[in-house]
Image (tube, rainbow over all chains, first blue to last red; front, side, top):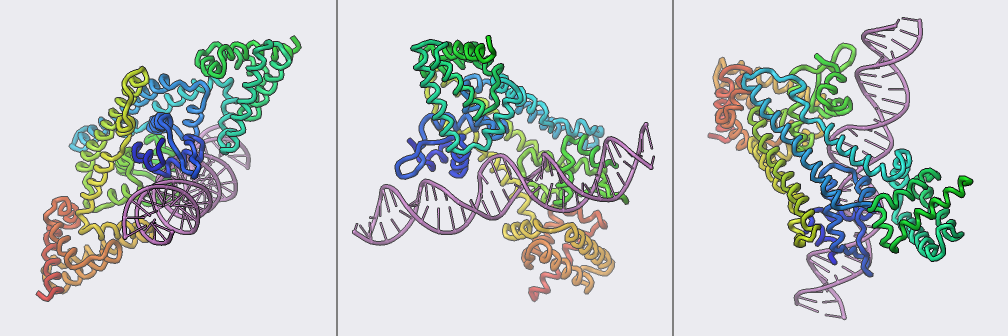
Length: 254
Length: 254
DNA sequence: TGTTGACTCTAACGTTGCGTGATAGTATAG
DNA sequence: CTATACTATCACGCAACGTTAGAGTCAACA
């Protein structure tokens, strides 16, 4: 475990930066009995990810959304980083070329067009890739509006908010696990679904029956979701899907 | 001549950005009778320089200092840009390498050291080059303290301040030109030196006799200074140097 | 045991470079 | 003459910290 100054020095960031990341819920360390922050090895890995995202000019809010997402996949993310960094490098090479062209032009070469003078500064391509990245994250969340609402809502969440949300989620997971012993159409399973759906609506975005049904499918169709959910109990994702289908069918009068 | 929206679109910056650059005195266009801003071809060249500096993360205050400096040399500056951009590109390549190393580590490769995880993010080398750049600019200004005072002072100058300063400078130049007809040790030449030195002290930094003497030497030793000053009249730089030496000798009782 | 310097905490103001919105004047096309 | 687009200034807001202040904690030292 490391104290804050040690982390700052090893990572090349300031103590203030680490305070800020803690305050906004991006990188929250353990707290010692004396109130000091204590950072783990895993915190270092997370910090490295954060710095990769920062290098690509992602805003901290968005980095937080991505890193805190249930289906966050480090390998996949790193591959995307590499690609975006190559795009950024290409842009830099274009700017260097523009410097050369400008030098040549000043030496009595042909006059440069405005387009040639300025197009290398454009962030368009990088922003397009960022948007594609965001869209990919978004597609797992059930809809553009839902995603937007989620981002808007979670933006203002305090530490206390997050703590409560995570506790609620843990309680709901317990109910689902207990219901696994009974059946996906049991009263307990239905109650768990009701609470689950309500939790998503309260904390993230309005979860319609359509979205909820699609979410159940995703829990199984996307193995990253499955793997993450099954961490709590093997087979939980599959069970939740079944229960969610029953819940939605009943709610729709089927 | 171009209106603001045209410039914004051609250069890929926002109208607000151009307003801001006007407000802070970085890029000041002509004003049409109807109050609209009008940008010239030369403004485009200047804007391109600004974007090169921005790409290298120079603060706008500093860009302004550099661009408004009497010995600003576009060729030399572009060569430095190219070099700094290469340094920035090298850093990016190191970050890409770190991504690869991290991916390899995650695949069961050896555990990465903290140093290996974080050292590529360092801005140290870039900052060192920026400092070297700044120091070079600084060395032409007669001393570290003088430079610092100048930056501090000019930071808060308004448009009206700059206008007055430039008018004063023009009047002083006129006196020097008239004094060329008489001699470097004439009363008029001495008066011009007195006003010149006072002008520098009032507007930039405390100009001691030592600094003033050194400035005179520089006006001739550095051909960029010479070229710039001689724009007003051929041979003016050399004449000013002689007059400044006489002025300093007399002030020191030689 | 007390002192001291280093390190830690929280709080809050300041900085930079615009984005955004409001209000009002100017220009041009229909 | 009207509507729309473009222009002006003004001012608040934002993100991501830097910086400073005041106070608590810890370990080394006298």
